[in-house]
Length: 130
Image (cartoon, rainbow, N blue to C red):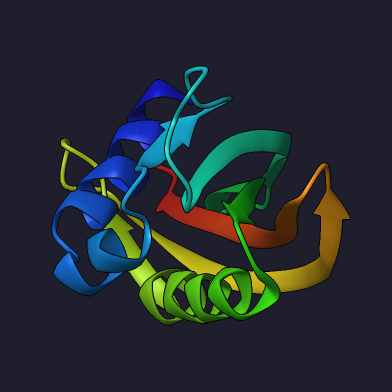
């Protein structure tokens, strides 16, 4: 997970448009108390490894939770996260690449005068066995 988390953070750091939407930042697991809105968190919620005769296929599900002060902002921020991550490639420090594909979106939901959208992405990496 550490390598995947770093690749997600690197993608965020290199995307100035997304940084403009997530002024409170993008956090692994949870944001610090008093983090200004809007912000997002992400977490690995599932993972599996499948083997074929020639490939190892690692599949993960990463969930982003987006928090903002109003519906319009949370939906605009969701849209930008989707632009940044859906059908895109992430590169690990090792040079290995993984592809991401949006699976689902839930919300917006109001939580104590904050609005939240959650969205899940499938992350897949295929490696040829040697």
